[in-house]
Amino acid sequence: MPSVYLDNNATTQILPEVFEAMRPYFLEKFGNASSLYERGQRARAAVEKSRKAVAALLGADPAEIVFNSGGTEGDNQAIFGLVSAGDHIITSVIEHHAVLNACKRMEELGATVTYLPVDGRGQVSPGDVRAALRRNTKLISVMMANNETGVVQPLEEIGKIAAEADVWFHTDAVQAAGKLPVDVSRIQCDLLSISGHKFNAPQGTGALYVRRGTPMQPLIVGGPQEHNRRGGTENLPGIVGLGKAAGIASHWLADGGAERMAKLRDEFERIAGEQLECIHVHGLGAPRTPNTSDISFDGISGGSLMVALDERDISVSTGSACASGSNHPPYVLLAMGVKRDRAQAAVRFSLGKQTTQEEMDYAQSCLFAEVAKLRKLSPVWNHHNRKKKSSFASAHD
Amino acid sequence: MYSSLVMDHFKNTRNSGELPDANAVARVENPVCGDMLELSLRVEDQTIVAARFRAKGCVPTIACASRLTEMIQGAALTDALAIRREAIIESLGGIPEGSIHAAQLSIDALHSSLHCLSAPGKP
Image (cartoon, rainbow over all chains, first blue to last red; front, side, top):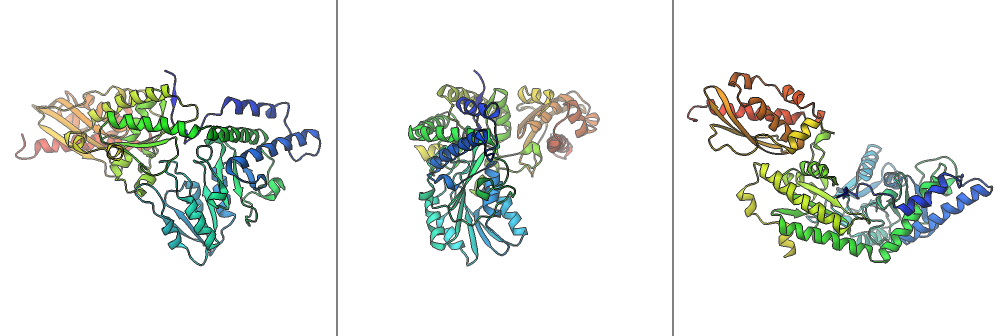
């Protein structure tokens, strides 16, 4: 069995057709999209074609798409580009560090921030958003889908609250775009960040949706590129790849790709729940991205399980970072009220568009063997543990 | 990320499991990361004649415990107590700097189990 890649929330493989679409723009079709001669104008046409594809993926107008280097830049741009000292931001405790650390920076610069909690399923309460509003609230930033659990936030309700309160609304849709239908009109967001490498485009590509009329200051100043919203020569091959991947994602979503992926994921969880005792699927019961399954296996360390699976050439992820010296369990799970031991026993499986049933079957057989091996070694895996029910089983029975 | 020796001890643990006739047993936990190690020893005539371990934790925690059991099995108590965490780390070809706690956990388990052995009223 070849390697099985189940860490698509970290990054995805570039699709061959995306790579082929990019190739000429490294070679014979190179050019600067700002140049006025033919070569430059061909580059400009390619950039604008991609802009339309990205806009279509998000239900936006092409003029509202600003190309950038990815999710972190988009998140930073949204926050630093709108908020000033004295302003108030509402965000959540489960945001990506690109949002959390930008908010912390703004606190250092004189802004105030409310970090909203999440419930046991990993969702922010719209009521909490409303209650956190202040006279000086400038921005609400709540992610569309969480990177660890895949849990989707109630953005339409939050967007309605933001619109009623006349507060700018940003969402980090990095883990949602290309996996779920995204419609900026339904969400009523003013800003939305996406990252190309999360949906089969190259790393270092991305875009920020900026609703027309949003008074955003650019993060990167320089030339007049992107209508003065992001300085710097456009990354022509990257943007072409991003546009191609966006087009493929739109077709994939229209063709029921998300439903097929969810079925593959759900079957994986169902069989795991049947075969393994005491496993806990985080975010179960909440709407989730179709590709993500975050599971705790009681009695063992998620980090060890990740390495054991890696030895079988299966790539998965864990939010714990023991070897990096931080020793902290995933903050997202702790925020959901998951106990430390269980949070440290979590492993994230994230499927991609190319993931096959055969790969999932293989991963599952290896998973069962490695969990059994680690539990046999564990001093806390005993009869007492096995008497406890699995939160997966209870939720699905 | 890990040395081949660490990975070998992780994949092919030495002396893992329980020791039914153990007369020195300790379970220690790293309060920071939650890693847990249970060390069971059979000590006869001031010598560790058998050692077994069970562990829940990161790869270095398992590898260090596995390696420790090799180092102490057949060792005189005085020699076993002289083992330092650096010796375990070195014999494994090194571990990541952030995982030093894993070797310390093994040393703590060894000392705790032998303390249990010497405590009055213990077998």
